[in-house]
Amino acid sequence: MWSKEQLPFSMAETDEELAHNIVEYNQDIYIQEADAFMRKYGVVEDGNASRTVVDKIEEILNKG
Image (cartoon, rainbow, N blue to C red; front, side, top):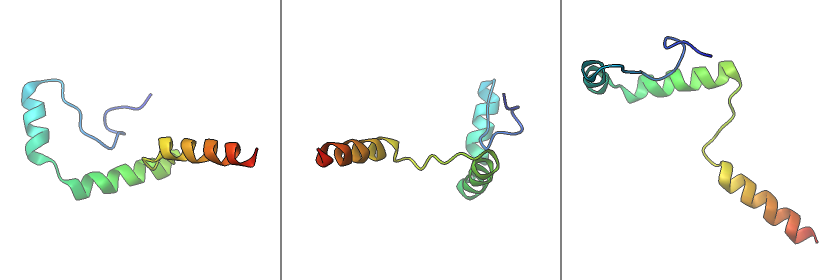
């Protein structure tokens, strides 16, 4: 499993850490780190998994 430092998002174990993470959140940095993480570990999720499955099912059904 990945360590806290390897993940592209912050984690909090206390309310203080959570508040700090919210105040310090930077979307540009998050996107850069998330993209780098996904490339490094071969993650290909694009947020369209359900649509991709539905399209494939419709393709198969329409062949019949």
